[in-house]
Amino acid sequence: MNALPHLYPDARAQRLNLASLTPAVLRFDDGHRAQAQLETISLTGGLLCFPSTVQPDSQVKLMFVTPTGPVLGTAKMLKPISLSQQPFRFVALEHDDRRRLQVSIQSAFGKVIDDQAWIEKYRAALDQQEPEKARFFSTPLALFTVGLLSLGSAIYLSGIFNLNLHLK
Image (cartoon, rainbow, N blue to C red; front, side, top):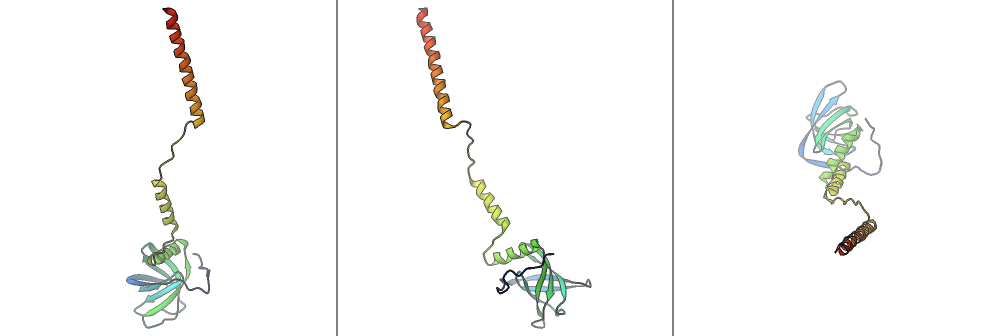
């Protein structure tokens, strides 16, 4: 997994407060699992709602599903803020998981900046363009050819008419 660099340490990551229930599953190092509800999410962490809190500084594998797909990352549990709410910080998140999370957060704010979406938009624009017709000849060459054929036809026809005149 890739460690999460802090590109702007002074800037707070954009947070999304989830309106719908988003289940999350935590897997601990000893193998046991716990279920929680994801309340707030950002690229750096979030807030979980538990029936009971988890030991602060515990590292867990956290999985939840976003509209763009599942996200699985390693998280460090922070100090609980209430009997049922506990924040966490992502310690590691794969590139694809990070991208899915970023697209989900940005789409909720109406700012989707996704490489795949950009590529699809570009392809759609290409499909709408009329294909350029292939040119077998350039215009000057075509004019020269037509002129040459006209001259040849005129010589041929004048030769036929001259023969007919001599035969009579």
